[in-house]
Amino acid sequence: MTFAPSSSATPVPAARTSTPAADPASERRIRDSRSLSKEHATDSGSGTARRGPRPGWLLAIVLTGQFMALLDTFIVNVAAPDLRADLHASGAGLQLVIAGYTIAYAVLLITGARLGALLGHSRVFLGGLVLFTVASLACGLATGTGQLIAFRLVQGAGGAAMLPQVLSLIQRTFTGLARTRALGAYAAVLGVGAAAGQLLGGVLVSADLFGWGWRPVFLINVPVGLALLALAPWLMGVRDEARGGAEERSALDLPGLALLGAVLLLFTVPVVLGREQGWPLWGWISLALCAALVPAFARYEMRLARRGGRPLISPLVLRAPGVPLAVVRIFCMMAVNAGFVLVLMLHLQTGLGQSALLAGLAMVPTAVLFAVVGTNWRRLPQSWHPRLSAAGFLTAAASFGWLGALLSDGGDGGAWLYVGQAACGIGMSLAYNPVLSRTLASVRQSEAADASGLLVTTAQLGLLSGVALFGAVFLERVEGAAPSAATSAHALTVTCAALVTGSLVGAVAGPFNGLVRRVRGLAGDR
Image (cartoon, rainbow, N blue to C red; front, side, top):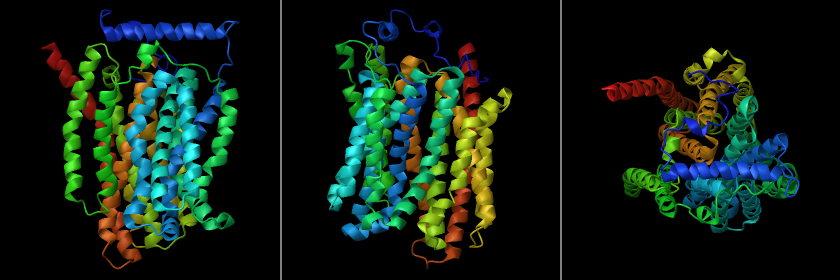
């Protein structure tokens, strides 16, 4: 299963599908394909021609929007102490300020992807950008905790509308080697977002611009958002991308949306808030209800697809080659990435007493190497590509283990800390980028929105789970104990061992997935 940079990166022809022509879902996909072809033909005609997208500028605009949305997942953490003191926020209020964005973001991601497919990816991206920019201004001007929580929820909704469109627009705009490079840039921005949030948050809070304290961490989005909104209509070639008739565009899977929203809400709320509240009974009940609703959602979506409807997540996407493995590996990579960033920041700032700016600088090697590897891994021999993801997880596991040992004595690790950070960036980038590119290459263009929503939601749930699980491992060993570098170092060492385990799960997922396929093949032969 080698990755062919030209042929396999192009949309899979309809002739490769095995769905019978009489299947209503198949007929709908054929109509979508014909409608899309007519749309392109119409756009090229002299009578109704519109400005076409400029690929380079389009990529720059959507990746900047992606960076803004990711940045706000992390940047507020650095400003939390100043924010709490200024607004006199309670512990629960501060939690909701931090988590409100993430909860709304995670719950609405797949819905944002589907709206992009129905209304046009460029339109929904720009609509989400407007909402995100306005909400950022409102957050920066908030005068109370309740206002800030509400505006953070709106900000998260704007991010959920923007981010799924990025992968879809890349899929629709680029092919072959250009698509692979665009996906490398996408992954680089994804990896840099966490580190940049910590670093930029530290810079803005430390600078105390105009005496505004924490407010610039939100207000910085406003000029960037306005600049993107001014440039996008000219440089993105925004046009009507909605496909199908009015009846199809109105056929949003509302029951599926309600079920999926409930599943994600029942998962994210206890994961985000549970540890701080001592894992109360309501949190466990919520997780149990989430587990019960997952099969109910899956059954409903499959029945809807068989009836010729438009399920929120297409079963064709879930059955596409490599998608189940990609879901597992993307989840694992984002979980260990988020957990690692959190616990290292806590150790450096709380355990060792470093400033937010100095601690943020420690993440620069990880971010830089993640970006460099993400844009250059294709230069490696093609025969290596199927094994790069597993090799990346193993590299990350070795790096976590080494950093845990390096910092176990309570020291700052000196220059070796940055070497270990660089190795982590290389490993996590290799774990993520090849599996993302190979998976999207196997998904047809007509299913790009569903695949984008699924993979982006998987990444977000991985972030949430990593913060909750690995954060709990660290914090349970430092809370209640006398603050000291030794206590923090011990907690970090134990957490690094847990991160090694998480990385090994991602590494063995590929062989396990291959074994399952072989067992199914043997069962089918019989």
